[in-house]
Image (cartoon, rainbow, N blue to C red; front, side, top):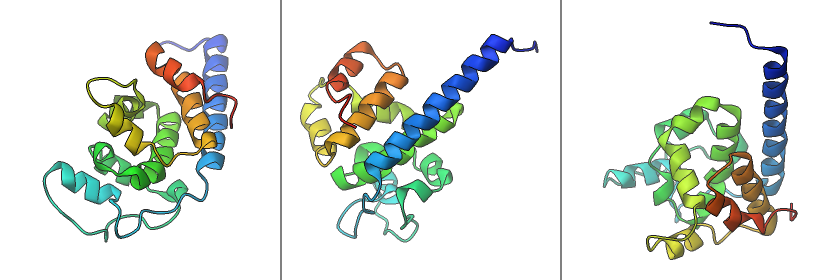
Amino acid sequence: MGKSSPETLASEQAQRKRAEALCVQIERAFDGVPVPDASQRTLFQAEAWDDYRVVDQSRDHKGRWQDLPVTHLRGCSHALPHLDAHGTRFYLPAIMCWALRDPNARSEWLYESMMYLFGPPGHGLAEYRRERLSLLNEPQRAAIAAFVVFEEADEAVQALWRKHLGHA
């Protein structure tokens, strides 16, 4: 294995700093988002729903999304499409910050599912996406827009979110 050049190391360090700054923006935008209550679907419930099962909320994290264990995200990789708007708003910032801090996250299904959620309306999914993202305020949408641009998402996805940049 070869050594990295000083330019490569500096570039990687700059990228990590940009990622951490984006996490700070996400944390500010989503700070105080409440945990889904008993009438709303949580992470473990959504994961069970993917397997046509029903579970209670006893295994779910009850604190701030910032303190959600990464093991919960990894263990519930199929949950995101099955969350309601409340669950999406609570878990989405944790997923984004996990992806920014862990380069291996981009190869996980949960990351792909999140990027699909951010995607342009198509395949009859416009209403589904609109409903899942309906509770987001403008600073939260701006944080997602910055994330989509940072992640160099498909140009159509970036175009969909760019209108929210500058509203943080």
